[in-house]
Structures are given as structure tokens and as C-alpha cells.
Image (tube, rainbow, N blue to C red):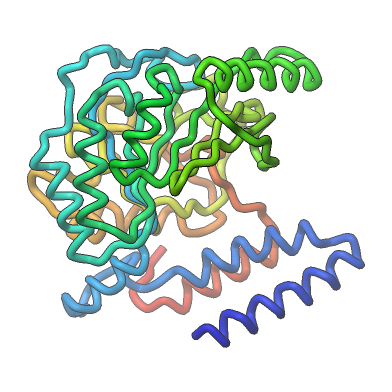
Length: 354
């Protein structure tokens, strides 16, 4: 397997060099993203008819790469680009029941899960002290998973960073925001100052690092935990959050979406959604609730008819409908070659019907 992976990597580099000479390297990268997605598709994404329990379990284990868990609902901020601007998230009593959280972690533990666990959704994780116990439980049960979360940094202290690392956290993404109506040069200067003010306030040692998708980014070196403080280049990342933020809607989506094939996103209520842009407390998104963990396991939800049909809808380059109609989150760049590859892959998969 390692030899095969190494050979593919060498072939990729060779082709990339050839495409670079022809000034086509970016086009090749776009195609390889689609090719990777196509290669990951399997019959069990669309139908489980005739599949053994062992096969379903192995496929689920190999496909699931991100589990996002909202440990509580509260967020202390209201950002215009976030659906929290339209939903009240100031109730501190809205907490994911402990038995639901443990049910998620215990199931992932039995799988030997090695993917990513993100302990956030539309909340501020550090607004509740229970985050430390939940990190600790997850780390003990799933030692090889990568556990982390995004934070606005308002509740972060140097002492809490140490506690988070001792609890077993692997990464924190501290996201700061600025006024994006300014020109690019001014945006960068203000972003730099905001990050450096935050770093100085918390007496942190950092180094600046380059990162695609951010105006500026700093890394805080710790023993084992990665801490990034950054300002995202948000004007190039704005999405309409499943049709909720209408001012950010930007044309019809034709791109496939990888999210329901690889991710499960869990609200504090136990509702499971197929995408980070969808949430159970918004009426428009409620038809996309895949099930609740009070009734189902994660694996059962991963194979329910509702998500099978959604994957069928989101697998190709046809126009999307519903909450996905104008979403531009994590799109694949269209080309005739990419479309042909996806269509050929889907046609080959037994049990797939459009």
C-alpha cells in the first residue's frame, strides 16, 4: 500500500511539472481534487442493500473523517456573516446532555476512529467550563483522533491554554475579525495589529506563518498542541450558510459537495446534520436533520435513506436544489473532464440511480 501511495505521489509530481511547463498546473490541481473525491465514492454511499454489517462498519470507519460536536449552544458574539445574527444563542442552559456526548465518543472509540473531532459549531466552546472534562473524556477514549475547535478568543487565557493542552487538545483555531470594507493593504495592517494586540495581551510567544485563506496567521508553539491566531480572508470565503444569509448568495451551485460523504455535524440537541452550514434550529434547514442521537447511532444515521438521497443529489455537476442551491462552500472547479470523470464513476457504482 505504501509503495502504491509513493508511486502515485511521484506520478502526480511528474504530471504537475509537465503541466507547470505548459502553464496549466493550477488546472491540474483542480482536476486532482475532483479525482480524489471520485476515488472515495462507493456503492454504500447510495445504497446498503445486500451489504453485511461488517462491510458497512468498515466502510463507515474508513469514510468518516470529521465529526463536529456542539457541546453547548451559547455564543457571546453576533456576527453578520453567521446565522447567529438571526437566532438567539444567548441561553447558557442549552447544553448537550452528557450521555449524548459520551454516546458519540464511545461509538467512535469502538470504531478505533482516527479522524478529526471538532468541539464547536455555532457556539463559543470556551464559554463553558465543561469543555475541559469533555476534551479529557474524548482523549482517553479516542487516543488517535485529532481533537480541536475554533474559538473567538474572548475567553482564552494563558492558563486556559495550559489546561486545554493537559486535557488532551490537539489544536485551537483562534479566529479574529476586522472590517472587510477596507482596501486590501489596510485590511492587512489592521489584521496584523489585531493579532499582535491579542498576542501581547495574553503574553504569548508566537511566530508568523503563511497560510492560504487568511490575511495573516500566527502560530503559538506549545509542547503538543497547535494554536493558530489568525484573521481569515473572509471576503473570499463568504457563503450564504445554506440560503440563510441572502446577501452572500452568489449564483447557482453545480459543484459536487464532499461533506455528506465524509462528515457528521452534531447540534447540542443531538440532531445530526450533513454539513457545517446547516443547523437544526433554523426552519429552512430542518428537512436536512438526518436523525437524532437519542434514537440512532452515528452509523445508523450515516446509512439512513435521507442522507443516501442527499448524496445522490450532491454527487455530480448538476444544479443543486433546496438549501444547497446557492451555497458556494468547498466547491470543485468545473471542467468537462471533471464532469466526465464523476459521471463515469457514478455510472460504475452498482445501485446508484439518478
